[in-house]
Image (cartoon, rainbow, N blue to C red; front, side):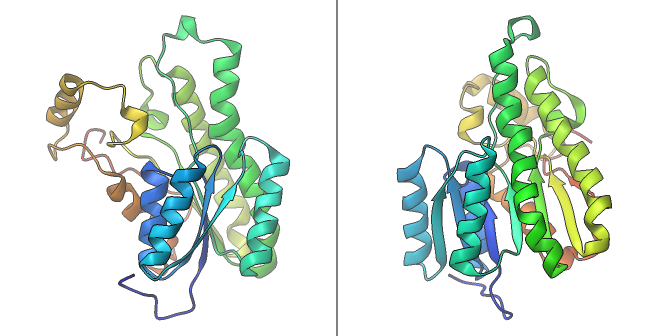
Length: 251
């Protein structure tokens, strides 16, 4: 793939990378010459197709199944990456779920389901990679939140609360592991054209487009560029920050 790194390739683990923003991130890192590990839970066919796409373009990629809400599976996944590639340089915590519903309709199962993936998954992944990062005194973690984690979204209380928790985790962890040479940052996208927003009809999307100063809906590639930047040497003095590619809909 074009735009290869002049230095040795980095190894990047991306959770929830079979489609949407995660897949766009995988393509972006692979295009730069990095070795990409595509984590998936249920979408094996999509993950394998993405890996083959990257390989056919000359890149290096592998797919690993793991439920990020299960700490043992996450630990095994990281061990697998280290065994296969001997190192891990970047963790992208992208896996997430959402559900639009009235607050009074949220069940205990709904609440725990969202937090299990969106918050616990970030915690388990960070916990699994940090011993390796601390030992090397190097590493970059990028978490994925949402503009709703910054400002809150009506009918998305559970999702907003979970994504706000991700922001708090990011900022606190950045302070804790900074002395070990590890950077932790967060990307909080606005409205992006992914399956997660597939419930929005044409009229809703048009209204959101008109509300956005840049007058378009975001693409997964827009988010991937932000994630890549925060993982790159160009962001070497940036940690604990929240970057929000949202077209200006939230300023």
